[in-house]
Length: 312
Image (cartoon, rainbow, N blue to C red; front, top):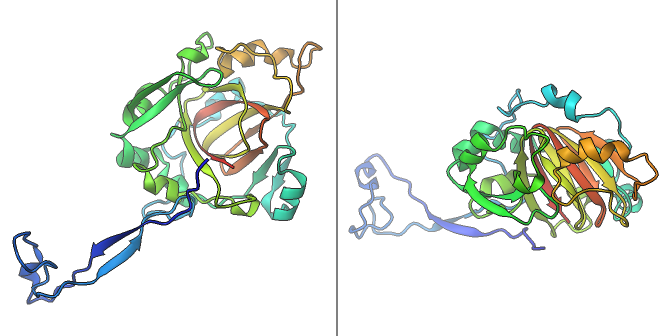
């Protein structure tokens, strides 16, 4: 875990030219006039803050689109992968104070929070056209979609969007399915991680967090695994969650995908052989799920899904 709240500063030379000096503004490195403004006086540097992670500082063009951001919407696959069943508590942020969250849920039990973030700008930046324009030629690290996601491969974002977001067949194992979640290069994507606004009102220590940005095609996801506490927000699409408290893990095969698990072990959950009580729900755009540390959880994306996880 690292602290990402620091602000870094860069110096940018300021140059303001009059009409008479306009011809001199095309700076020549061999010219002694170092500021390019037709005088021998060096302009003072202007310090501008480099974007700060989690601050909600978005570029001016980052405006949430009216459509699904260019991503394949979830409606076509809701019947196949979704459910109306929800056994995870859902609370609107307007009726959940910081003290109530820390006392009732922090490190105790999951909760879905509605309206708890203000990320319209981030949603604009995460639209398909915007992401490809900014980062399409940069590399992303993919993880295998089996338990613990050990295997990795690297492709460009453009390759991933074009070739890896189709719905996988049910027979495809998790260890042969590739998924972009985490392993982000924060230095190459500074605008994205600065534009996301943290739900600091529910964070015990708002300066201590780590981001994992991800995207997956409909039917992709990860099987049951555990880690520390985390907030998970859906930006586009929908995501189905299954959770079980610390203790025995729900039945699964290590190389089975979440989609395979849905058709094999999920129907047995109410049977006596199920080793762990499982709760579930589908969360949509603008909602986030708090998962306490060491809770088992598995996910399945419905439609092309864009999401941000904040590890605490």
